[in-house]
Amino acid sequence: MAQDYYDALGVSRDADEDEIQSAYREKAAKYHPDVSDEEDAEEKFKEIKRAKEVLTDDEKRRMYDQMGHEQFERAAKRGATDEGAGGAGGMGGMGGMGGADMNDIFDQFFGGGAGGGRGRGRGGPQPGRDLQTRLDVDLEDAYHGVEKEMTVRRPEQCPDCEGAGHPPGATAETCPQCDGQGQTTRVQRTPFGRMQQTQTCQRCDGEGQLYDETCSTCSGEGTVREEATLTVEVPAGIRDGQTLRMGGEGAAGEPGAPQGDLLIDVSVADHPDFERDGDDLHYKHAVSFPQAVFGDSVEIPTFEGPVEMDVPGGTQSGETFRLRNKGMPRLRGRGQGDLYVEVHVVTPDSLNEEQREALEAFAEAGGEDIDVEQGFFEKLKNSF
Ligand code: ZN
Image (tube, rainbow, N blue to C red; front, side, top):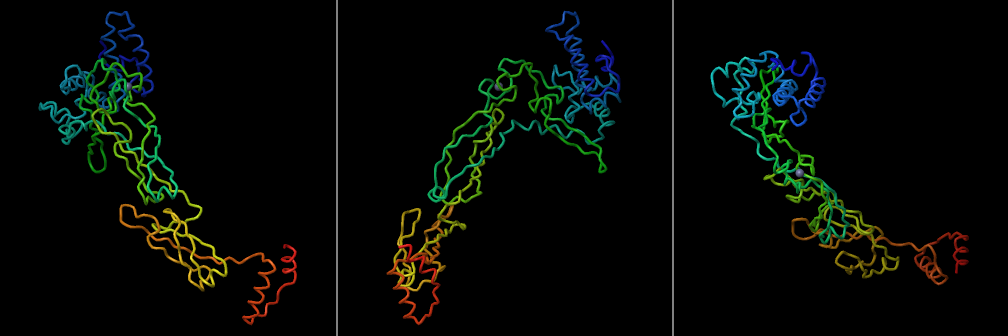
């Protein structure tokens, strides 16, 4: 066996990661036990796999270069807590591995602060992500509250591997990168000293194990995107831009972990007749001049059906009247907002003969001397 991983892969000591990866692929194709007839194929294959693993990990490669092959592997073996790991995983979090000489070796590289990763153990299975979607409702739905069916495409647990990402029969091997811990500890030198950072192992995604097979249905993701039809309860009084949260309707989590939530941004459409201001509604109602003068009872539409409203005599155009508790229901509260009715007096743009005479008499009786434009009346006359 080669006593050097660079030799094993046939790359130079300053080879970059791409070179190492492609050298590995080339060698792996040659020595993979499934395809190779060579006697020591399996040994060779293990060696190049290990070589790639060490040399494509910046931290390990740095240590390998500094320690040399023998010392590095000896340290790694002692660091390994699981049979078969055969890796330098112990370097990730070696707080619990004990052995004075081990610590001595690592102290050279990490200083005394190493080892915090252990004890916390794996972070546990990751819960699913929250997903966000949008729902359009109209104002009347927002008034009454509504149940809406909606379809969301979301990651659901893969039915074939039950979220594991590998077939049930796949063979597991302890992840050599993290030594089965599911997380790695990285120590960085900073102007403030050595900073230690624990993160999920990228090699095994925190699982601590690697599998020889990947689920073909989900490509190892553990989830597949599926359409789900949900019934959303939109509460009465919902406002435009508010977000509803449906617990457990987001993306699937890792096996054993909860699903994320679904966040639904509700968009309330504008209404042609009502303008909303918080829980209040505004409505414009047209009355005739005589109605404004004499007063009248008028019908105002609401989402509960029409209601009667008294327009008092002498109402000015633009005057606003309040109908209490005829606005939008208060979300998660009691009662309703108010409905404000702005009364507009409509000026007729055409009059029949009778109306014209009456209006002229009205003006005259009030002492008004109106210089009526002749053309205007000609036009009016002609139109009847
Ligand atoms: Zn699957």
